[in-house]
Image (cartoon, rainbow, N blue to C red; front, side):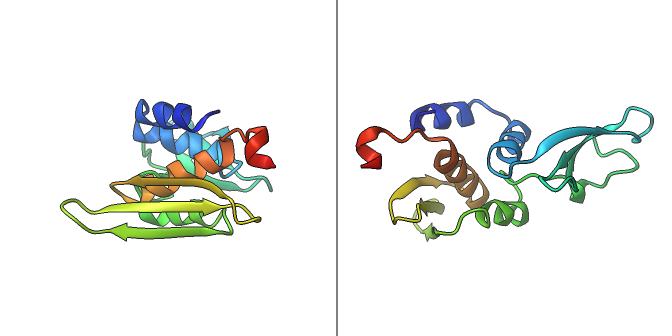
Length: 142
């Protein structure tokens, strides 16, 4: 995908849709249905080792809201996304409205993503998606 396409898709999504996209594309998790939750079951996120990593649910009796992976709105979960990248810079930009700039670099020092958003969780998630999904042209890889 192109950077502009990723940003446009992000802008048209709800927070939970964004979280699901990050879980799959950046974290490498897959969605699995688990039994329980008053008979209807609930959706869990399973990591690459098969561990149930987090939940996406309507907060049934068996799942607490703290168990849900919500990196686009929850700073604690956003740090897990941050940790997926080795070379990340974050800057808090003061002014009339505070915002956060995130830059993710490649191993070779190239800039893979740079983005500025009103909140840290939104900035890191969108930058991570751009770094992971952006097509590299022949000129950029040379």
